[in-house]
Image (tube, rainbow, N blue to C red):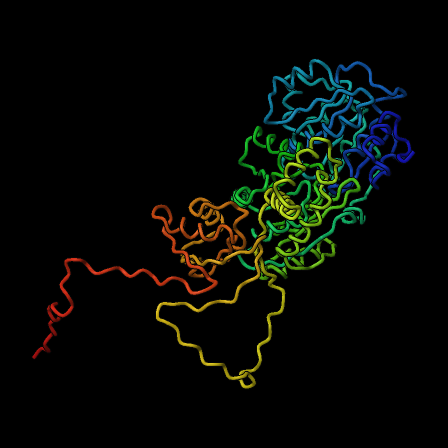
Length: 581
């Protein structure tokens, strides 16, 4: 058996979930020395501790049987610091104890207390909840603690930091003295030691927090970003890795809202988590991530504490975490249960030293690079398209009939191009970003430079032709100049919708957008370029001038003289002012 001493119904559930070998903390709690006694476990986020204490209490609540009896008063109580973590624990124990016929009830703040009390009255084997709500049910007589044989305090240090000491002491005092007490904590401050000494009996200490397991399955990336390109780099990282689920961390609620709006506008299926959301909104966001309706979550540290998302393969730190502990907590959302994950820190030049110190304090080694370029992402898109399950699935008769009709009207090359266009249409556009860590080209000393050729004269009002730039769009592109820049608060989050609306474009028609101090340059797909100019010059809406950059632009319109103005030779001469004196 891969999980030694695991009870048969739990071992069956683990095998069904492809748990092939225990993590260090799971192996430690299943050892013969840790069976049936109190344990004090130091384990960091992502070490598999929920399954660990689920395995640890199995012998205590099951006895010699493989199935639990009819539910009455609960046998085990799990206390967690946040609603999200408590609900996550309920789900984890639900599948772990599925074959043991366990009934698990959650009691958390923000949910219907009357419904929770009704479920408790109907009976439960394991109750999972937050300290305040559990105490409330105990005080009102809704939660019977007389038959409890095991109490688990999950993330105990976090509960103390949040001010739940009094509630925890009340809950422990309300349970039988001969219970087992399992205390799990990422750190071991004095408060935890005092709690363990008071409420545990000869607890066995298990320390796996400093092992390498916490970082072994996480690939750390330190991504250099130019000033004001953090959001663009975030877009490219999401497109480069194409993770089934990703989480982006920001330090403030305002940053979460801002980045969420930008990603939605770019076409990402994204939700947000912040402290200002109600419980119903938080549950809706989490459910969207779990069932695949959303693939990106933008969150603050507090809002994301304790959440566990399936297939979360990418963590992006849009804002640097405050300390090494926060870095570990954020990164621990990925690389769980044997899965590989990536943790990418976006680092402006001004914060490089702080980032290096942060990584050093956390004891992790990161690979430094610039943000993924649009060309790299396009190359990956081509490879992903060729391995797309929809394209690899054998066609049926109906597919063949439709293909014959298409081939009768289009050539194979045209059909291939149409297929590529359809595939790309569902992908968010990439961004033009730079790597600030690359060395600039060295200029020759002034003395050794060749003399410049004299500039050719040109007509007044005309602009010099520029070299054509390489296109990022299929089928070629045309570059345009808009007479608005950073000085007039130009920003992609409103420029892109404006171009689509007034220029009658789709997001796929727009390539790179480069914003300068007094102008913006934008790349438009060649087939849409001519009509784009016509639509942008129509009156109404945003009055922004548009000029092509790949040749001489039209001269600016000169306002004609008034019809009633006399000819210049008949206009009265301006009177000169006479000097005084």
